Length: 472
Image (cartoon, one colour):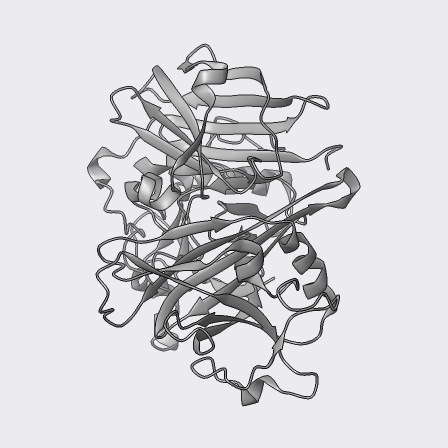
């Protein structure tokens, strides 16, 4: 849609557009963790060094508030859920137990000194003990600052994601994730289970354990006949290779073990990670089958009775686009998030509508702020077309950042700014990308791609369907 100019805000004009939902190389596999939290901003990159070692490269910058630090760094079970914008995202309850202590192998991460460094490690990128799909956690000796980031592929085409979402009497999710880089002969996969009972359980235990299987619809059946609160119509365990009872791809319990379901999620969640080579096979089988797949959880007291089921749905990256074509300015701002466990990428392609160099300079030098606001613009009637900016509310700030203590743009880490303060989070960041600035370092200019670990496109704090405002 087109963006309109408001002349109500004194000495400023702003461009507003609604964020709409759209679904939208290297020579070797590269994994990366994006960090911008508690005074440390940058990336940690993981790649193959040779046949036996991997390379770990740091590209980190401290802030003026925390110019130095000594960090212990570890690897944990689960990736970061970026829908959670609180410090709880880095807790053990969210990330699972510690698996690898990089400090023992590589020493403390000392800033400055090892902020731009390369390490050799005996860990692996993929496989049973691989780093892919896990999280890296940095914490100070006093544990007053804890930073976390998912470790995921830099190539968006290598990863696939599917989810089975349960509602009753079992609720929660089963997240299926796959990595497949066939040209590098690299593959990996896992299931992350986070399930709980919605009704009281008489047994005084923290969780119950259940058989679970993957069923496929009959070739003559339609999804319309199947309700996810009653999957008794399902009869066929997914067995594309005719492996037989207990040996098929769909026999999740015999391949992976029983699945745990928490009895009281408010008291204690039971997140579980499952890894097995059969999951790699499942990805290729899913790509060729035209039938729907359902995960069925059995009653633990009556092993032949279905307790709950959910359809396994492929999850495409989520995207939102701001279209701008008004007041002599034309372009787009695109936001993409591959999954809830990935950071969001923002891509700014803005300029003067006439593409004149001097017009572009005037546009760039006049910018004061790029921000996501609480509300989408609301055009009450045609007479309010020039006042639409005033309907978008304040800057989007669900994490409650104190607006009086926000660092200057580009001088802090992303957790120190409101989620909607895009200029504050992105200015002079991701220098290694080709931003093609017209006035580098001299203006409030955003151009090209930036990553953001505090801009979810999913969950209760999503920026989808809010307003974007350009102020000058």
